[in-house]
Image (cartoon, rainbow, N blue to C red; front, side, top):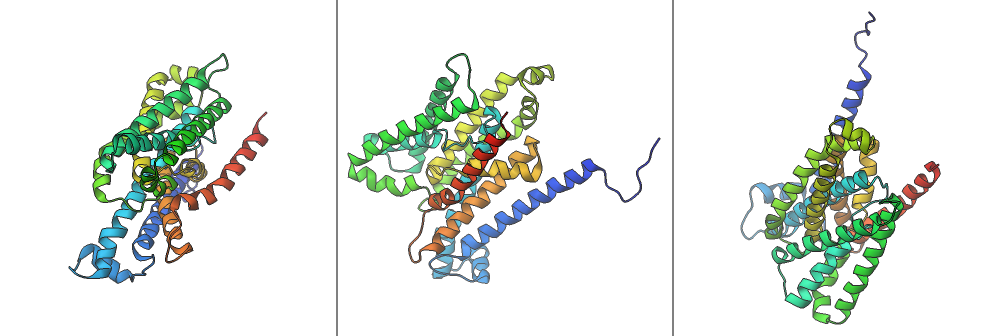
Length: 346
């Protein structure tokens, strides 16, 4: 019987420590981004004043009003929407086995946007509490169309077919959305800033309405982690290990609809967060979905909040919407992922 010298860590223990360290680093990045979000903007506020505004607010203090009524809701909404997009992207990539799958690239955000525009122009809805249900319906409808089109034929839903179906749905939904906006200037005025994507302009009432959907989506994702690990081995082997593949796919689809619908209703149709964060999470934490999903949530939230802060500083006293900042970062990442997938393909 061989023994391992004292002081040398087991490889499994070392990898577990690496995962914990990666999650801690992602959490610290989110805390730092949130602190900057509260302090920076067209009007800089000192760190001590920010802390006082959060813990000991003073009535009539303009800095405290800016922090509590504008920046704090914006930061919390950015955290909620970014984590939702990150986890939804990780779920989609795992279920479809497609490295470039993303709620935006697969047309889910475009479907939600079309539904919200329809709600504004046809039904006259204005509050996020009303629009969220349309966003959910649009996300679910887009997901159903993409799945149906990609699954048609003998080849089934291959990654390439899913990507092409998603692109077609996104193009169609975006075209109809544009038609509705151009035919109604009032709808365009109410929708144009939401369409670009930003956590600005929302309040905590919208987050309170969407919180149950977010909690349900995150709960489904956490419960699906072990089943997704089995499904990586293939459907037949996963079934032999006791995984209920069909139930897992349906559950993940419900989780994606809840998370994408809530995230899009909160911050608009922001793409690329769900593409980038799962790849970074897998690099940091490996392929175990129980860790990857948690890392994707933290990294997605940190990315959106950081992009929002950067957008405030790029063009003062105006702002660049967070969706544009994320797109500038995400487009090269998508090209790199596609090139790597082509190189590794047989």
